[in-house]
Length: 32
Image (cartoon, rainbow, N blue to C red):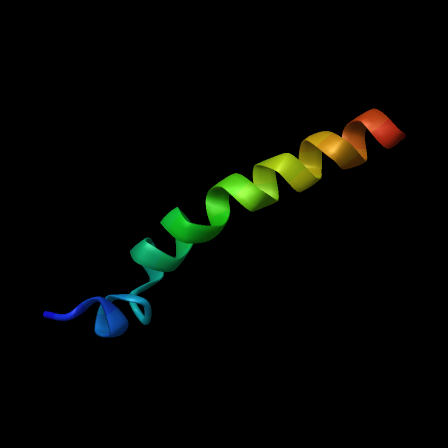
């Protein structure tokens, strides 16, 4: 299976976005 198809599977999407969301949450928490 090629990488372009893997993007559509939830577990792969979660892997891709987990780090940016964590960084945004950390920045938001420190801003509060």
